[in-house]
Image 1 (cartoon, helix red, strand yellow):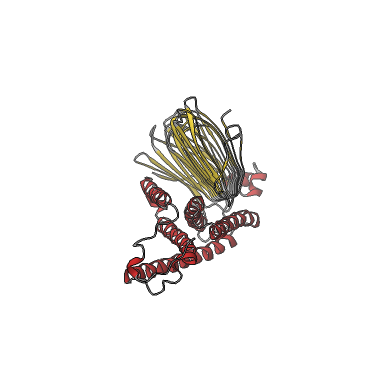
Image 2 (tube, rainbow over the protein chains, first blue to last red):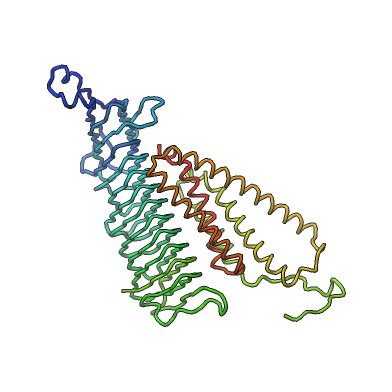
Length: 300
Length: 180
């Protein structure tokens, strides 16, 4: 099924009923199609916003406003897969704005791709893959495997506290993650990252010059590996069974309640400090390394 | 260090162990590569896999060169013309890899520059600053390795940063096109 979703307002314009809308030369979108409870939803939009909401109906509703530079909004639905695509005129590079609100069945697997459009999602418990270049991403993610990616846009992710797998990457945008659990993989270049994780089994992170702050409750046998170059790392990791720490910085300082009195020089003559120690049975392993960033580690 | 005159090639040790075990960094790079290949979403990542592999191998060669320079200065300086054909072949292969990597890297930087020119000024400044930070970080690590070639932490950081550079450059180059 293929439908074009812009309802022109020109008829109303002719009647003089909506002069402001006519002046803006905008159109509205309002489409509804049946969908599987666990179907796949692919959404693409260049500019504007994409707000995805999970609901308890087996249908997808697309509503919103599009400006004059948007040719149409396609909604294609077949075999459990729904594609919602904002179509711009051929040769258009500026990208007309489309502000879309899309309600999908909660269990849907959702993939959103955008260039400068902001993305938000709420109430979806299926897999999510959210990607934008310069837009901001605000997402609630569930226990399923999810991925959130931006180049320069800031990312805010809120987990539901259930173990899952989440990959987040950004070049210059910042990351704020709360209530995550399970497995996490974070990559940033210069964006700062602040991560709050509940029960965690595996956390890997890499930053170049951004600051990285991690608060996590580690499971027994958890693995944490954080690498920075010039950014500072702040790790607050707790595990009732114990931690094995392998912390090293080439020219930065190592400090924090787990480091007091235990930091040693790597070499008698060269730079570098390290902290190799364990608490309890040392079952959760934490590695952190930097070139020139400082590392602060605590288990409070 | 004590020195003694060597009269015959048979008196020389058959091998010279490196100052420290290099295998952990190599094994980690291999593991990272394997882990990356295990990611199910292969279609989108295939663009930067080869570049990252090349970056990792060249970074390891760079580490080897730094270490080699270190050894050469204290022990192997007089032993010119002892290179075997096998070693020559390895050196040539490494040089070719280095050249190929440099070519790909330069090409990527050119493409990324073109991409930056299509961005808004604010975004260009933000992303450009990140790329500069990345480039500088690799330079800083290489400088530190020049002073402390056998440092395992620096070796690991160089391998990972070189891979990261290729990944980020590819991401920025393909941004927009990839998303849609």
